[in-house]
Length: 76
Image (cartoon, rainbow, N blue to C red; front, top):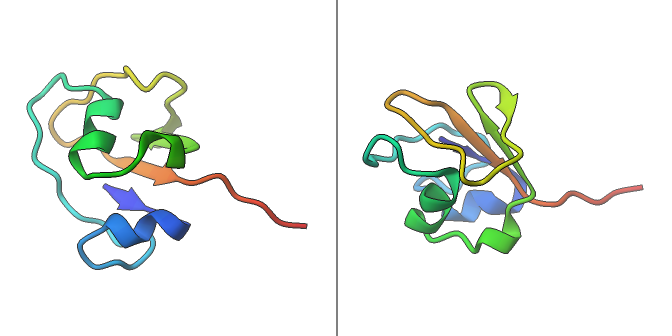
């Protein structure tokens, strides 16, 4: 798992983009993962699973899936 930008404060290293392992049962959803690590679901804007955008937070995760979470990003 990797957390980016402001979500990095929920990572063990608190460093954006640094990978870390989360142990979950196979078949739990992306939403379950978000809640498991204590992230408010509303703070997550984009979720990438194995290099692909996961539009549905009920997407099921399996062992060895790679997940990246991004907050809403603004700029100009």
